Amino acid sequence: FAKVYRARDALKRDVALKLFPVTPENTAALTSRVLREGSLLAKINHRNVVVVHGVERSSGFVGMWMEFIHGRTMEDELRARGPLSAEEATPIGVDLCQALAAVHGRGLVHRDIKAQNVMREAGGRTVLMDFGAGTELATGLRKPIDTAGTPLYLAPELFDGRPATRASDIYSLGVLLFRMVTCEYPVDGADRSQIEQAHREGRVTRLRDARPDLPGGFIQTVE
Image (tube, rainbow, N blue to C red; front, side, top):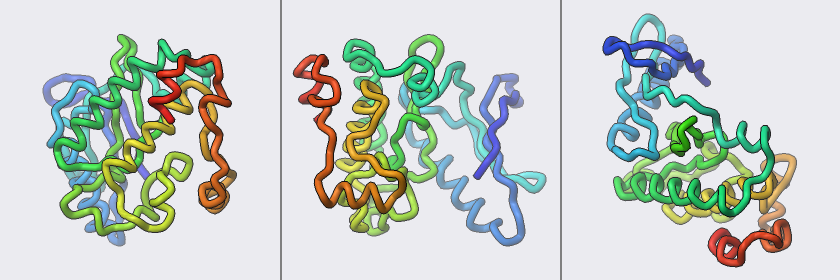
């Protein structure tokens, strides 16, 4: 959907520049979507949520620039090093809970929490990013989630077209914590229909079965 560049803004800061090409067919919808994502993020001021510096349309592109984070995504980290221990996952989980509390406290839902949308800064900071699927609670609850979110992380009620809520974000965070300590998913499938069917049939891998070596309190919290 976009290309992301490392760039330098007018204040000579290194920034991540996210650019979407504009065409006559997509100008209005795309500009509205990008401006909306930027405005959603601009409402949040929290160390564990990515900071957006600006949004603009220019020279055939619409885009936003945000803080440049020196690090890699949680997904890249898991693929490089494998599952985390409970001791490693807990502080990351706490940071993400605080980020989500800030998001929800502003009347927003993220709707696409996953390992690819979490950055791990070189200094240890955890940052929640990419609010392209996000929506405001006050106006977005009537909209089904069939076009947003990643199926492996979706709460089961969303497959029925029910609205995104704080609870569905928390469910996705639980899936992320499960993945962090197993590199697997509690409900799996090759595509959306298989994942939906697994939910309907109750085919769920319990964390206590996947990682019986983890502390009981950690397992209870995630499940």
